[in-house]
Image 1 (cartoon, rainbow, N blue to C red):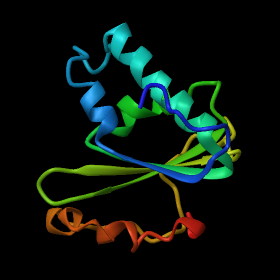
Image 2 (cartoon, rainbow, N blue to C red; image 1 turned 120 degrees about the vertical axis):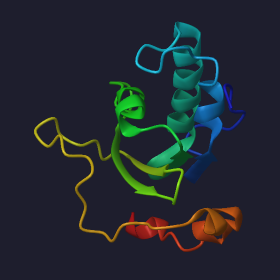
Image 3 (cartoon, rainbow, N blue to C red; image 1 turned 180 degrees about the vertical axis):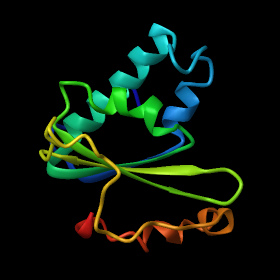
Length: 140
């Protein structure tokens, strides 16, 4: 995950579920994570950005809340827009949708605003990976 062995612009979609969470396990204070953890996450994101085709989509499913993830996703070297939905009962998951080549303008800071219906799934549905098939990536 830190050194993806794929060529540039190889994939239309990249999906990760919990990978960033694992990298952040020993990161210390979530408001000020250790530099080693940030370096690993940035290496992962740079690799994902590199292997995505133009207009490709990166889907990240995480426990990480937007105020912790957005500063990483919004790094200047990335040209993607960021949207997210929250789902789950008890534990909340965040479903991030990053679209390469469609960076949001600084004049529109509202990243949650969307005309699309929200994704609402329960833990039992997440255990069955069919939720990926119910997510229409082309509409994202």
